[in-house]
Length: 361
Ligand code: SF4
Ligand code: SF4
Image 1 (tube, rainbow, N blue to C red):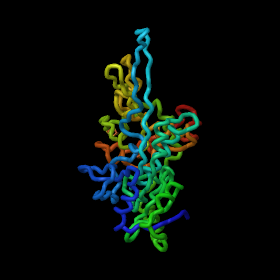
Image 2: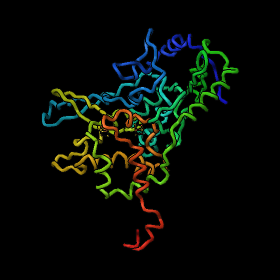
Image 3: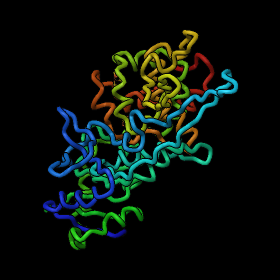
Image 4: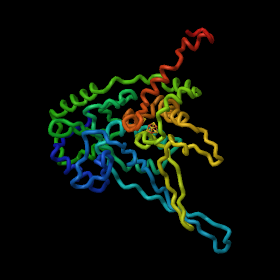
């Protein structure tokens, strides 16, 4: 096993104080009824006993970010000629996400395949990703909306994290997962994990046992493709949806954005902001035509993207980390697990497909 240390509960605030030297530390905090990731400062007690309402994706992919400033410079010799000058983008400040869950960290692996691939390298994303560390809390208990185990993960999955914390009696066992994590664990406040390690393993095993039965998503890419033109299926699946967009904004794996230029006179700033594929405006074209005119088309795209189009491009990887936030926060209880399962169950078997038309009972 990688380097493992023990942190006493009583030393948590002091360790956060150490981590916050020279970097912004985002921790889950109460905000009304919600739990959101906000910068830690002395006196803040992170909320670690429940999954945060939002994912920490804004640490690496802000809801709204300035890409660069630009100015139009007129040529005094030739006033009709204008050149554009761009300012160097700002460097992101070092950051650490503390207390996210394994599904949150896994969400960034889904981003990486899109924003940091040999084909496409989004320099803004990559710079933030490199500047950000993740100290993730293994889930001691699953909730009934969790399905991380159905998408190749689990309550103590360390993929995407730099260090994994497991709650044990009197504190936390901390395991370094990456070289960044090893650095974070070099603190005089931490002691050798010793016999606490066995307790941490028991906590992880109990969390696995607490998971609800895993839906079987095998064959989802093909099953959803088979339902692509079946608008009756999608009208039924989206009947309750009110197009509020909560599912996309809270999702750790939704990465769509739009770009706007905010100009004032001869200067301006180019902004990138989260966009929401569940809204009518997302695909509304300047001509007035909309290729996804109804909520049925939009839900088909959201579910299809995560469980079919993305896996077909990325060697079977599902673009959902099973966090269950879209289920928990949807005001009308649209359940993505049920939709994918319905598509799989509705798909004709190979045997049925081979039967001549009219032969099916
Ligand atoms: S689609 Fe839902 S369950 Fe999957 S990662 Fe997004 S919010 Fe979580
Ligand atoms: S949260 Fe629910 S109601 Fe809102 S857009 Fe998503 S599926 Fe529709």
